[in-house]
Length: 495
Ligand SMILES: [Zn+2]
Image 1 (spheres, helix red, strand yellow):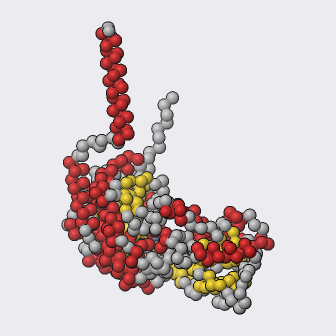
Image 2 (spheres, helix red, strand yellow; image 1 turned 180 degrees about the horizontal axis):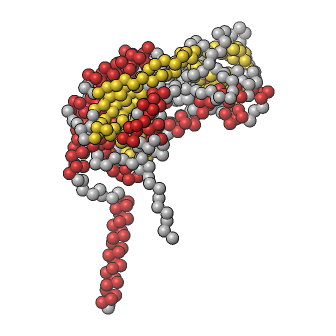
Image 3 (spheres, protein in one colour; image 1 turned 90 degrees about the vertical axis):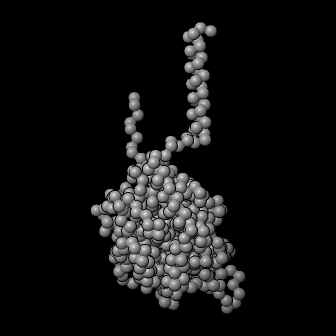
């Protein structure tokens, strides 16, 4: 073998070896570069706040009070007022700098809600069949003695739109589209919710467009113990407002069966009222940063809740977990470099006035928001967090995920949109947004029902979620660099 051949052979073997090891690294994940002294210190602090949070029952006790002592907290209610006072007082007790920031909120009040089938195939003489339902939030009322009309069933808005006006005019439209329980059990409950919620949002207006007198949807959620799920609905501007309700899964099933056999008539009574807007508030609590007090890490949930349950999961769990962030940092006597701001938003459920009011009141400092974390996807086992941030920022966030590894919460999942409604205004203005990644398989079993009560809260799972909020807040408040919201546009490819 010539010397030249030997050189070529050596170079080829070296190249093959390097390629194989690069492939191996790709397959098993690049070993991270050794941590810098600053990263080591930050990791130590994150582990400290994690362990203190996992050992604390602060959030659990605050959530018990919000749920059991105060109860449901629909915007404009006396309970919502009491909750603002309670959360502000508790955060002051911790030594945070607390402000109660006024916002005007809608004041919708539920009235009577009942329905009976008064005519249907096979009806026994002098009987009716009770239908279990609840008014959708924002619905107008029927006359006090109700409305009686023929029922027309359609699967969804798409099917409704294929009908001519004479088929729908003067009738009660019943949508039979169901929440997909199989999808939820496979871990895709938010997708199942997203698919089923369109009829709740605008089903009444779509029915009114064809002359319907009322609309009834199938409750958007799982479980099916004949519990109705409420939720917000909206009237489109160009059509008449008609009453809207959600019946239980079981009642929709019965109506659909009977309507296939012949004529079905329903008597429906809903008497909600929309009262004038009232003053309410967001609660905003700061621990000032020691180096960059003007830079803000926001962490929160929403304080208002639907009125049927006690707002334990949705979203007392988010508010109490954000309070825990302040409690843990104060308990350990730590000082963040940037300001950590816990917030309890008002009116997420039926208006979003709290989050809109926050953006308006803090317009000048939005550019100083380093990140915004919202917990409003339930309090199930936390597996990590979702992030709407750039690829490079998510790579850097591995340091925070590493600190959550010991509690089994080190997944970082990219999301192309804001992971929460109350931080979406900030997200739209370029603030990176985050949320815990929960096991949400049973979330919609209780969501917006009378069963959203404190007994459904698993203390360990709540602590895990609070720990994700605390570790992530601490990382964002102390990391060398701020996260970037979205990837910079790709440079034009070279010719
Ligand atoms: Zn919520």
